Length: 221
Image 1 (tube, rainbow, N blue to C red):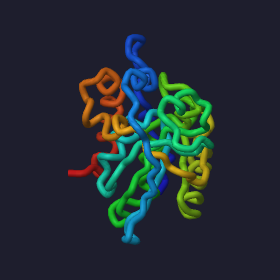
Image 2: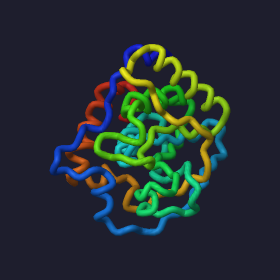
Image 3: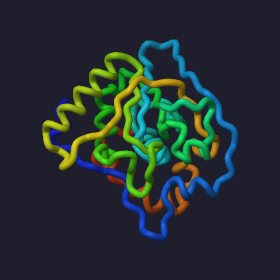
Image 4: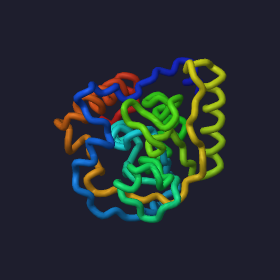
């Protein structure tokens, strides 16, 4: 798969000055308790992927629409603080990134295809930033679950850089997944439940529309 030869950046649309960034918008909502989630499956056909690509509302909205994806959970990983709250992660001192943990059916979609969607739906060249969302919690990251995922992510990162698809080098972190902490309830399925909210209308909706045009053959029916 040589998708790196014709990458199309579909990063979150830069919000106008009157639209809050993802973190600012979320700060208006009351926190609810979070919990640690360990995903297991009895089926060898089901696997797990974990990606950080800016605001997890955007990431969730994209991957939920892919055929073969079973669940998408927003949460935190990559840091040192146990059971972090959103407020703590937003301070940028926990080391955690906002991520989505995805379970998918390998007979319907491959990790290669998930990587393609990951790299085409955010800007992996901006360090600790996506659009107006700034901070280490918004970093671009692949948190691999096994050696195969690690090798594939590193391979395509190198190939994309060599292809010159982006004017700047990719800064995506590729590291082993640690404990995944599921985010507060109000973060889950956010775009589908809050589509009329300002951030959804001006940032997530345009991103989803671009994604659906590029990956129309991979969408759920």
